[in-house]
Amino acid sequence: MSRWLVTALSALVLAACATTPAETATTAPGDGTQTRPLAYPVSDEFTPQTYLNVCPGMIATNVPARDSNGKLVDYSPFIRVDGVVVAVAPVNGACLSSGFGVRGSSLHKGIDLFSRESIPIHAGGNGKVIESGYRDDYGHYVVIDHGGGVFTRYAHLASRERAAGKGKDIAFGTLLGLMGNTASYPIPIHLHYEVLTGDYDTPKKSFGLDAVDPFAAVWVPVE
Image 1: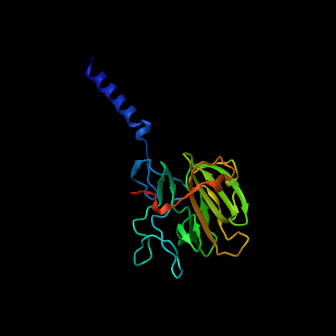
Image 2: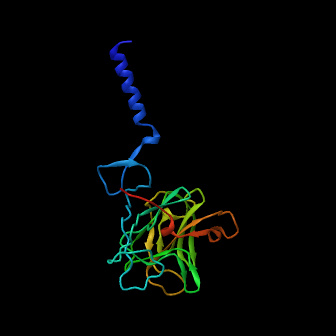
């Protein structure tokens, strides 16, 4: 076999190896030059902040460790729950007004993200919208099935986009609607965001799922 043919075959093998799905890389959010293996979802519409502050001047309950400026310590914008990666806070420009845990006499099953104005709410991961409607307690809300028994819920939206309709396939970062204060009782503008796991196919549907504390889940670092 000629040296030229050996060289050509070697080049073809290397090219094939360089494009195998296992090694396909994607641009890391906020970085236009470096690439890394896909570890978290990316979107042209939404790149979550790499920090989250506790709301100043508010009595915030169940919040994790924070520094002297109110910024959460060791925060990552993504978590892995049962092998599924979702965003911790699917909104930019908001602060944390309440964490997950007992609040008053009941369990607060999500986190509250506050803003003085209505700002966009995005899908926290890829999946399918399985609930999209209105309830007196949750206001306008959306539930996304991310597969693997992992779900996210977005509540008190001022409005819901057509892309957030029941049965729609949805991509990470897709606009779901605007932050609001819809409910049967007066509340400030905020997003109530839940990460849920379990079996959806019960009479209670999403309200029979188990709530997960996103701040206690496994962080997915963003480099």
